[in-house]
Length: 360
Image (cartoon, rainbow, N blue to C red; front, side):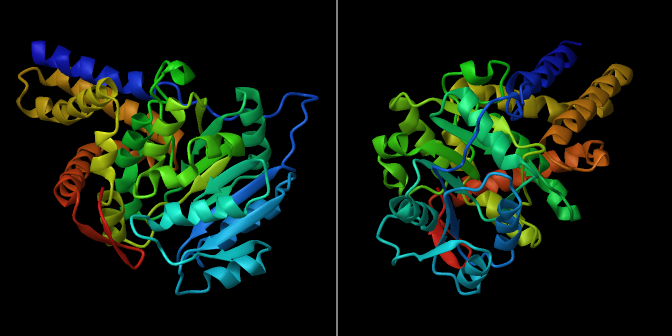
């Protein structure tokens, strides 16, 4: 019975770390929102398949940014041509300097070329929903500026993509931005796919040069911004901003999550990390208790609570199929396997987008 109660307490930790997935709210009646001073910067390496969806989604917004810059990071496909065909300004990245990552170097060059006073860095495999840009700018204005990071709503289409479920939730929890404390949590971080920041704040912390060698630049940039007392705000992208992650198959899925996930865990504040570990432990032990716990009805009830919790969280995070929550032990085992691989590969070379990089 004691183990059952402990596991129940661990299960409740999931609500502590992910109980406040706040969405961007529409602009209030009479509130003026503008994108006239906004530069959108998209680092892109071999993104000819993804860029059209993002750029076309921007073209349909009622608000138009001052400029859209695509930084072509030594692509070997039609990335640059596709960007121009869809109305973006293209900058060809200069050769990658020593100690820089491709993404951080591309972002830095885009920021240097930008003319707007607000900078919005976007991953190329994302897109805006109708009126999404207006909503995030209204949220940024209502939050008082500083920085705004939006967690893309995870669009899931292929079976293998369902196995990103636990990674997605842990990634959200690891920012600390969606705890029950919300924006009052002092050590919250940023998501890597969307960063809206005032130029003066970006320059104050040294831009992407300050995190030039990091794969998970969002974790490290958040530290720089907190040190400089720049406000950090995170919101859910449901109905506003979406993405599809690792659609090419199992190999891309595993390599993608391997390349920096263990490092991300290492940058998570200790209390938050312990809560996440406790929650995952509860999810792991609940089905085991059904088999060997000695009180099968109680354990089965707890397992049902775990399924319900995951189904609720996953629906708020993406279009994961409801049935995937029933078989979540397989997702947990996959998560542990890839996370272990990430730990052992940390500091070693992994292949990503045609480059050999050192995993953080």
